[in-house]
Image (cartoon, rainbow, N blue to C red; front, side, top):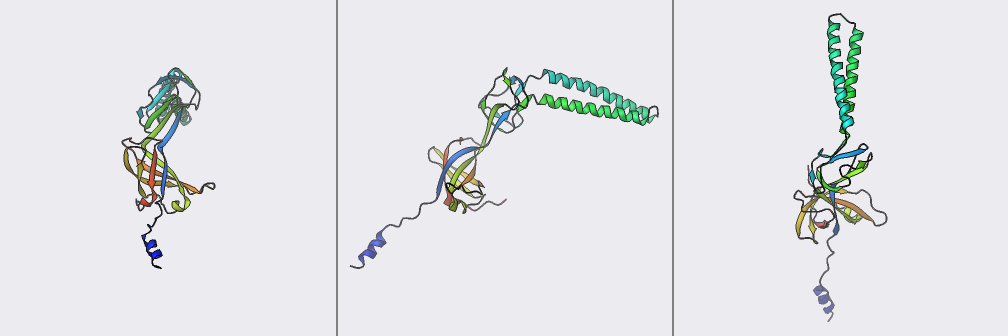
Length: 244
């Protein structure tokens, strides 16, 4: 009869500790607010919400008639100064004018070049360009509306890659390393798991919760994933870190 407790213990199923899992929300790889560098009136807005844009794409233009005229004016001044500098240099070579006169004309030419470059820069500042490859998700102004200096006009996101941001217990975070790969599941959506790579482990522990922030980078070239989706990872499935 004394063996009964032993048999009972052997027959009792052993409950293994659950694999450490973490859930989080997908974030865009990059997210930027594009502002106007100067004050003015929008002459044209070239994009709509939902448009894909490339880096340096022209999003909008402010009225720039005065700036364009200044560029043309300084271009003519530069042409005149270059002609005068060249002519004076030839005269100096023939010993008709002094070296001081030749130097003076060269300096006037160089100043004209700088003035022309400044005018070109002022004209370019009337254009609003995209700083990233991404999608236009918000357009705050239309053509004909006024904008102030540094006022936001567009909001862009890059979701060619996305981050799954999770918060895990510090004891689990210490077992992880940047570069480790692990599958990311999306249980709330009919989407197959995606391969992710641990891109960032926050070196700080939140004092209130004892959790550590981790960002897992996921390729999203097909844009099947949307920022705001919930994802889930099993930390026990993390592989060895990838080597360069």
